[in-house]
Each structure stands twice: as structure tokens, then as C-alpha cells.
Image (cartoon, rainbow, N blue to C red; front, side, top):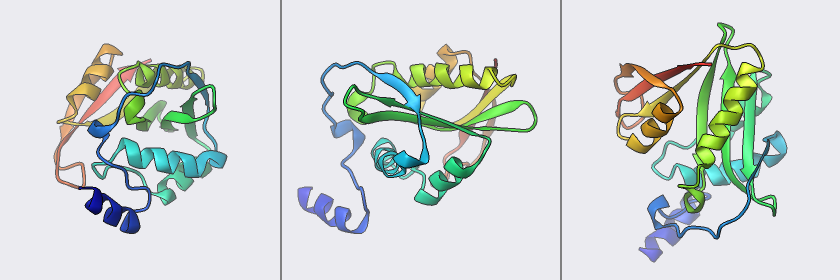
Length: 176
């Protein structure tokens, strides 16, 4: 397996072993900060680790999100300023916002970081007088669905073959 990992690292920049192989990080404090283009390289590397199944965004997608004036982006950092989570949302002209991606480093999961980021993002969206947040989530991603349901999101539609691998998603919404 180590041999295959070394081969993948040559052809797939930033390739990381599967998320389930990550050992939990030591307990620490976390702080939410704005995420800017200056952190492009760092968010790309973290994104590859968060979405090792291939759902990760490309460099060009992140560049678009950073350049889009209607984009909101935040990160969670440790006291050493190491990014361990990120989230992006796009503000729509129809009075809603779209959570485009949210990721937490595998070794920092199960600590409420996604919920903290989501709450922060929702507050930023609500402060802009927007009334709704929407998102898509894989049908198989039961953990994420549970997080969203606990935060008040409801599944309003199942979209067939939404992901590159053909898996369906649920479109979820929340009134803010």
C-alpha cells in the first residue's frame, strides 16, 4: 500500500491516504477567521485531504470562489494558525445563499467544527438580509445529513446522478 501511495503522490499532487486512516489530533483551541486568496495553496491541500473520494474542488474552482464578489469564505485555525476546516457559500440574487463546500481535516473531525463553521456562515448570510441557505449532500453521506438536520435543514428534493460517480444527492434548505 505504501508503494501505491508513493506512486499516487507523483501523479496526483497533494494525494493523501484515506481519511479513515487519520489519527485524531491532540485537543486544541480553534478560531474562525476569514478565508482569503492568500490561503489558496493551504485550502487546496486541505480540500484534497477532506475529500479523498474525488469530490474535491480544483484550483480553478477555488480561484473562482475567491474572485466572486458574492462569495463568503471562512476557515478554522489552530493557535498556530494551521487551517483545519473551511467553508464557502455563494450569495444568490434571489435572497438565498448556497453552501458550496465545507470540509474538516480528518484528524480534527467529531469536534463540532463543521457545526461551528455552519453557524458562523449562517450568521454572515443572515446579516446580509438573506432568508434561505441551500446545499447538496450525497445520499450516502448520512453523517453530514444528520449534522444538517440537527441545524434545521430539511431535504426538499433528491437529484439523480448529481455527482461525477453517478450518486444522487439531497437538496437541503433552511430558513434563516
